[in-house]
Image (cartoon, rainbow, N blue to C red; front, side, top):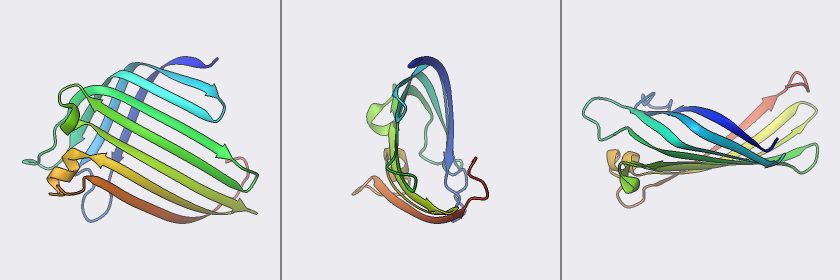
Amino acid sequence: PKLALSVLAEYRTSMLSGTFNNPGYLDLGGGGFTWTPTPDFKAVLHSLNFNWVFADEGSRYESSLGAKLILDYTKSFNEFIAWKSDLSVFASYKDLSKLSNWTWVNRFSTAVKGVGIGFDIGLRGNKQEALARELNDNPIQVYWVLGLAYGLSKTW
């Protein structure tokens, strides 16, 4: 009940400033497993994962085969406050230092009577993106999102 065979599909891209799918990333993994030791924590490991990178012609992006690790921790402190932390790591077999990437996102949310406020803060390390954008001095990206939501039903 705590260990399962799994397949993986993950797609991510930017949507601002005309950068949709430039770059875009599609990870497909097989031959992996998911481990759920507690209801709050999950780890996914795929030793055969292909990281496709979509970008304009002439760009410096390169796709490669590697391993994918995803760690997910979710904690509700009470019925109103929750925290979720996700770490996603791709380690390239072709060139570990240049083609690998990682993303770590922490989400804090609260909801009272259907109205919710959420705050996400993310860190991302991707040498290919840093080189393409000529960010040689600091290849780590930091981003945040603040949102307001309203739920129509508690069964969501």
